Image (cartoon, rainbow, N blue to C red):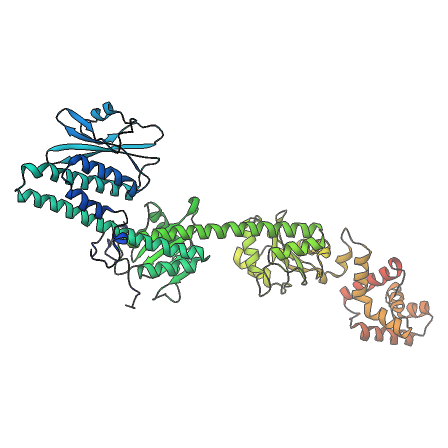
Length: 586
């Protein structure tokens, strides 16, 4: 076994496969070098010496009543002594508190019970009992009922008071009864031991609270919480997501690689743990589910193969789980807000928005719009554009570039990404993830400023439409590769036509401008004549050999193969647009 830090919280737990964790508290040494105020934060040790030194029962009750408020948000309303004629109110502390109904006290019949007091939601008459029966009552009130610790402290005070009253009652008649005094001393010692145990428990709980509070104050995340839990318990601590994937580990003996359970085992384990309240042992682990508001966000666990954990370990694990629940819920809320802002941004960019506002909003969500972007539209028949499909697209397009902006539109997923998809790599990744290749992707040309996103979005849609209406309907189509199809769709303007002409004739147009030649006109007349050399030469009023020379120069300058059918078609359309639409402008 690897060495551990000092184990502040340790003991044995059950070795059953899935069990409730035991709650027995191990005894601790009573001697502690710290000041008495730290050892006895509620003053019960000091009070006990005063009570047992007092000879009058009424004075004992008054002392106990004065100490009630030191135990918490409680108030002693009245005190009573049992006499032969019934109950007699103890004068002094409660003399000015007529709100307690003495008749109601008599109706209790020597039992503990609730009494009715105005403006108090919790009122309780604690019976003071000795060997001979009822000795009296202390009536305590509070604006809310006490918690487990409060019950313990109040009960301890009542027990000490009862023991002191019994001693005071027996002292005159049984002064020499050493056995009875020994019994009373034993009761006192038992009460003191209980106080010691409570002090130790409260100290350990305070240590846990303070450690996790420091983590929260420093803004620590999952790693800080697991490290704090490891420091508190000396046992390796870990966080998994709901599927069993490791998110954080603190402590020795981390498995490498980390084993991920099957989905069937994981779901069954989660169901078993969810049936119990609080941390649950599963084999060598103590497991706590992190599920704020009923949503399972993950699992916090402690590795405990030697079953050394005790109730203090469970307390630390349970409170660390609560801190982790707040952290994960906060992270989820931030993620949801960021996602909503990113989707609103991309929606506005696709529709057209103010450039200055776009830059500011993009910077607020950590996205740099100053870079070149591409619009990508993904459609996969049979897969609804839901969160799962959106995550699959985002993962498939993930590169070393920044995280893309992503939204959903009309059954399609739309992305703004800095990285131009590499051929069919995104399509292949999605086909593998979704289990079917029957999907199409359209990619726009590059976009260098926010005002170009609406145009690029239409380009991506056009590329997607061409792909879905082609013989091979699945795959990726780039707008830059559409050729003639770029100008056959709706919504094309003069700028798009000019871009098409520049793509196919730009080198020839520039050459003609520099050298005062007519290569573009030659190519146009050549196509107009159906590729006939004689007719084209006659139309240009040049010799046949001159036409051949010009066509050869056109091939060399444009680096186009005039024998390729698609190339000839695109060049012919480009020359028509150049001459008819653009008026032969250079």
